Amino acid sequence: MEKMSLFESFNNNTKNKQVNEIDYENIMDLFNELSELDPKCLSADDYDKLINFLPLSPNTHGDQVLAAGCNVIASLCSDDLARHYFGEKITVSTVNILKSLTSRIDKDKCIQECLLQTCRAVGNLCYYHEENTKCALKEGCLLITMEVLKTNINENIQPVVIGLLLNLTHLDDYNYKFQDNMIEELNLYGIKYMEYNNNNYRFYINLVSVMINIVRKSSSNTKITDYEKCYFIDRLLETYNMQINVTSICIKFIKQVSKIYNVYNWILKEKHKTLIEILDKYEENQEEDPKRIVKKICDIIILLSNDDGSMENNKQLDVLYLVEWLLKKLHSNNLYVKLSAVRSLANFSRYKYESNHTTISPAKTIMKHITWFINTLDKSIKDNNSLMEVSILCLLKNLLYVTNFESLDENHTDKLIKITIDVLNHTTFNPIVMKGMDIIRCIIKKGGISQKQLVLYKNSIFIKLVTTHCNSVDEDIQILAKKLLYSINEDINESEIVGSKTIENNLQIIEKI
Image (cartoon, rainbow, N blue to C red; front, side, top):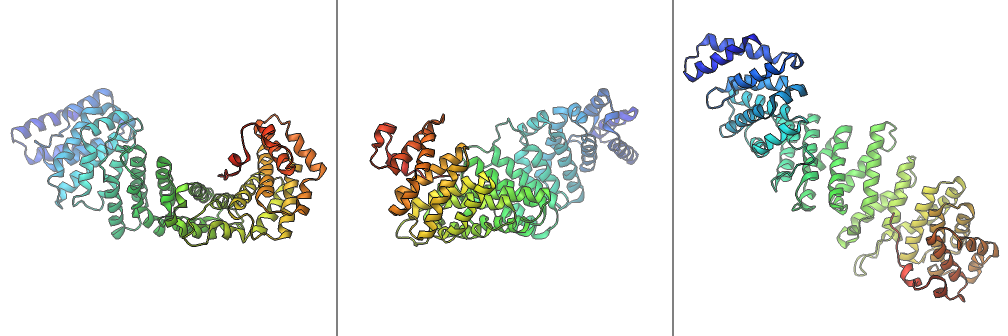
């Protein structure tokens, strides 16, 4: 660092317009030496000298000198210590250089190199450094960087600019003021980039990460429709679905948007088809990353099926498309996929559509597979598979409400009655007890069962079992058990059992899971 005096004399000579070729070569050599130093080897005093003497004034120095100076900063800022020592003063200086470049960006080699090194410097200064990032944002760096994206910049600079955007948008406790159309601009930029560069996966991951940051930190005036047009995400999923990291970040974007707005039905704008195609590809893969992708897609579909907005008539065909696919997944070798399919179908089975619309409904489609559900419920009881058991019970209850089991023949009904009795016989697990009694009560009230079939529920052993639940420590189970007894023995006055709560008030609750 003993050569730092060269900077001082160079700055003075530049102001006096007395720089000769030897001075210029010496200063460029010094820049190269500094950029190769280990940042941990520099003292606080060394950093102070760099802050005071590095030639970073766009009004005084040329593009080549500014580029070399920013390269030194970017190189040293690979270490957090350098970010700390350089701090706000150097951050302001580098942002000012970036400002000066935006109005004159062209294909000139020196300008492009200066832009590259300046973006590197600001990006590295802000890398997980809160104070420097806030300083850059205060200086308007976010808007400046978006303006840079719109200019004619070289291909090798574009990933650096996106990296800068990523580092500018990482703060959690900051009141960001994003442009209203920022997502739209990034979406179009991503699509344009894909047209001539097909393999820069890191670029795509960083760009989607920026978009996720914007979603997480956007002001409340953004709408879910602002994200429905993110065709860049669709294109990435269609083109690079075998690239685990690209696929994962795109699914994270979809999940983040849905979570922020608590709306999942927007996925029915074609994204659902892409997601299930990806799941089909990764379903049998036992590696951890593909398994995580499959799990995320399953979770998204469950939440989609639980979104009442998906019941709108204009989404019916998309819902039926999903239902048909989910029915195939009942036979998946992936147990998480199979269970998720049952849970999603349970939610979809409650969907009703206006009578003037097509008569096809999820429930009627699902009813065609009732044998599988009854047999699987029986197997789940024997295997003590409580998750599958509860899920199928919820599905059966919803089917019963929507269809009244109109297409269920006598043999199926007999088997279902016997299995629901087995449900209560085999467990004391409260969720299953609740669902078991609930579905039995529904069968009695809405299943249209014969007196011969009702006798199975009037069996003294079964009545005794239900009676024990009337004394449960769980108040909800108590109430449900008493209601079930009332349904079996209609001569009992329900109002004496449950007070002001009537059957009708409780019967029409359709299960969501």
